[in-house]
Length: 194
Ligand SMILES: NC(=O)c1ccc[n+]([C@@H]2O[C@H](COP(=O)([O-])OP(=O)(O)OC[C@H]3O[C@@H](n4cnc5c(N)ncnc54)[C@H](OP(=O)(O)O)[C@@H]3O)[C@@H](O)[C@H]2O)c1
Image (tube, rainbow, N blue to C red; front, side, top):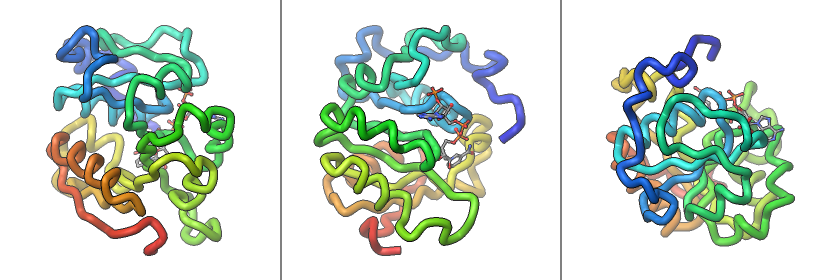
C-alpha cells in the first residue's frame, strides 16, 4: 500500500495508549513482528480495542511513532512478553524465525501473509511457517483484511477474518481476538485443508 498511513503522520493515533502502563504483564498484550503497513495497522486496531501491543523488529532502537506506551523491542524480547504473536512479515523473510525457535516454542504464531501469485509455492504459507517453527501453534488469519480498512474503519467489505489452524485451542484464542477487534471470524478448518 503506497498511501500514507496514520502512524506515519501521527494525526489520528497520538491519543491512543495501552489501557495499562505495565502492559507487558497483562493477558491482553499482543506481540506483532514487523512494523510495516500491516503490522502498524493491526496494532492501531488492537489498541483501539483495548489490547496492549508490543512490536518485535529488526530495528528495536529506532524511535517509534507517536503512540504512547507502545514498545519496539527485539524479536526475542517482544516474543517473551506475549503468548500470541502476529507475524506481519512477508513469507520470503520467515527464515529469521529459525534463529529464535526456542522463544517461540508453544506460542501462537499467526500467519497473516498473502502471496503475489496463486499457487506460488507448493505448500501454503501457514504450512511453511509450521515447518519453519515446528514448536509453535500456527494459525492463519487476517490475510483478507487490508491495512487501510483496519485504520480507517471502513471494514464493511472486509470485516470477515478467515481463521484456520491444526491447533483447536490456538484457533479459539485467535477467534476471541478477532471478535474483540469488532471483526467477524469465519472458521475455515485446518491449515492443510486448502
Ligand atoms: N498491507 C496490507 O494491507 C496487508 C493485508 C493483508 C495481509 N498482509 C500481509 O502482511 C504482511 C506484511 O505486509 P506489509 O504490507 O506490512 O509489508 P511491509 O510494509 O513491507 O512490512 C513488512 C515488515 O516486515 C519486516 N521485515 C522486512 N524484511 C524483513 C526481514 N528480512 N526479516 C524480518 N523482518 C523483515 C519489517 O519490519 P521491521 O523493520 O520492524 O523488522 C517490515 O516493516 C505480508 O505477509 C502481507 O502479505 C498485508
